[in-house]
Length: 294
Image 1: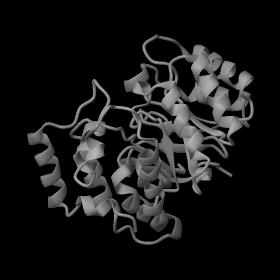
Image 2 (image 1 turned 45 degrees about the vertical axis):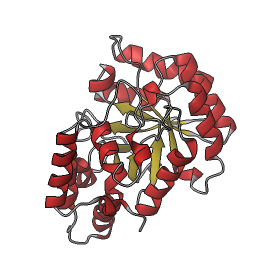
Image 3 (image 1 turned 135 degrees about the horizontal axis):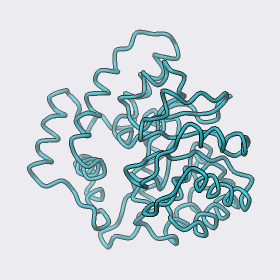
Image 4 (image 1 turned 60 degrees about the vertical axis):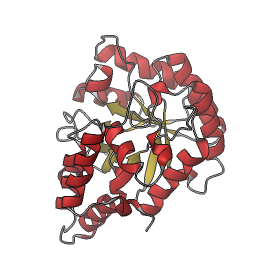
């Protein structure tokens, strides 16, 4: 049985005015997403500004996660280029009981499939008691997983390589591995993905669409008529017109000013784009109140 199934948010990180990580609010935000309908959340993915957050702050948050009643639903993104730092963060997380990790290959350098296999091999040789979700996002790291590479990794490490987040969208239609979780990175791919055998999604915009995405997922599982998918996709399409981190924080700042704090070089939408975003969402009757706890 696939281990990662359902609606997962690539959770945002919340910062104080001095740009330090607000650990309590970041965790509370993630917990609220689960209350709204997510099956789980990913901390320190690309949406969570992982590459910009210090290792020490990541460790501070992970140490607090063990106090959450939702800790079994959490996935830790490493968001690190250094393999040594990745292994260190995983080691600390494992000591606290966390096993599931979302890991993207390093950015900047050019490499091939065999190099990627070697990268994950080095990690698993050091931390073998882990469950890894491969993160396929060529736009961010410069490498795009192939079917062959994923198949080889799963064959080599069937207990550790348990799934894949597909944000490049070259795999979710073609990859067929038994008991392997495949989760596209967009609500637009949720229903089609489920029909193809995918197990759910891991999406940035689930920070605001958790309840809609969960309804689509449950209707599919129960064989019910889809009445929410059109609106879900419309919301995603509107956010896709802007930088996702900027637009999500701009939208969420309507209910809490702390969402306005982003780590440079990231920034909020300018006033015109923010007004345009909110007006477009209003036109489809999607307001900040839609993100309340239900």
